[in-house]
Length: 130
Length: 150
Image (cartoon, rainbow over all chains, first blue to last red; front, top):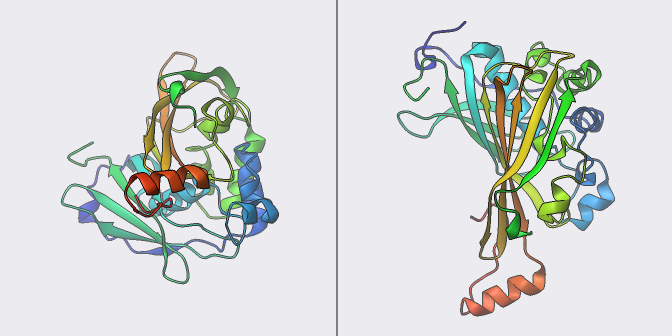
């Protein structure tokens, strides 16, 4: 189990593999989400979107994957993600550490155009607010 | 949205952590740690009782609504093949100007009743255009908002 404080560790930004339509379909099938906004471009257009969008848990998974790669799965206790923009097929999402305050450890997800698509607060084992 | 669903339990059931579903999530992520990540979120609370089990009762419009956020409190990872109980409830649902906001809480427990995970999903729904226009007029010319403006 990782008992180190993450503030004492190097945390480097990492870029997830480009999100493909096939990956989006696999994810929504895996979590049994029937919302067509993730799979049907025509439905997405009716919702005012230019294309299908990545499912919420898929976005969370991209953030969590970056954290797990750097700290290990057991180090991460809570993750609170706010979705700030859509992730579309073909997007490459970079997960970076950001600070939202002394106690809050933040993550920021940006697409390849530099748009923030999500932000999050993570609580790690050993944090003061654990 | 149906604001009267506040506090209601919408789903109370048992589900199995299907290895095939976990494999789909692993494929979707395609990273070295995908298996560990997949076992932290193999279920999406709002659909764990069936596609319409939450969207139906809270009357969420899929054309005007999107997930606005998600939070997880992990006590351990799920185990492939294990049977877990899940309770999905409406923790919060409010009218906020031109929007409706709902927080759906999902709690997963193992056979001994031990908590595995708490998962919250916040849905943001724009009110129909007519209602937004009425709201703007009532606000003396204020502009109708969009998700993300809050």
